Image 1 (cartoon, rainbow, N blue to C red):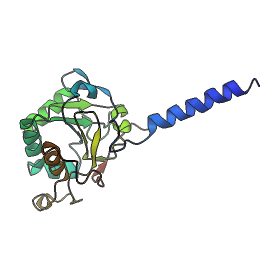
Image 2 (image 1 turned 180 degrees about the vertical axis):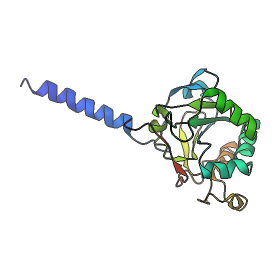
Image 3 (image 1 turned 180 degrees about the horizontal axis):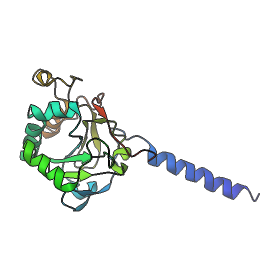
Image 4 (image 1 turned 60 degrees about the vertical axis):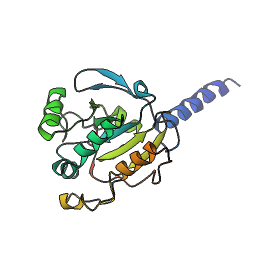
Length: 205
């Protein structure tokens, strides 16, 4: 019948949309993406195939993010990761005018001021990368192994507070996951609950 072909096309379109918007899953290929970094360089996740990649969603105005930067927790993780050949990408998905939105130049100044050392800061003002990963909070952490498989997603640690003094006693899930990968082991705790401020996405996107 004549209506069957349009119906089939509609169902295929719905299926594709659902697949595109599906939340990422540990053990499955991590969503690839294209983004521009704070220096204006275009990059893709697949550029780093063969390396472990950490994705850190961040917002400098968020008290939970400030907790980890004021205690040098994230900076130490970034530097330890780099020393082991891990690529650390900080992602800013705050929409223009929202808390945490910065220009590339301002992102670089923040890195310098805080002594941060990511391999790059990705600017995602349209929220495309954030939504591909279903990034909900700042911080929200993801780890992708060299095969392009998502092996960790969730919180940075097990102390869901904005209290700086909690960092010292916390179990750092990201450090533990990276240690597991370096030892050739599967990540012992691959999924945890993220905590922090909500990602300040563009309304209606």
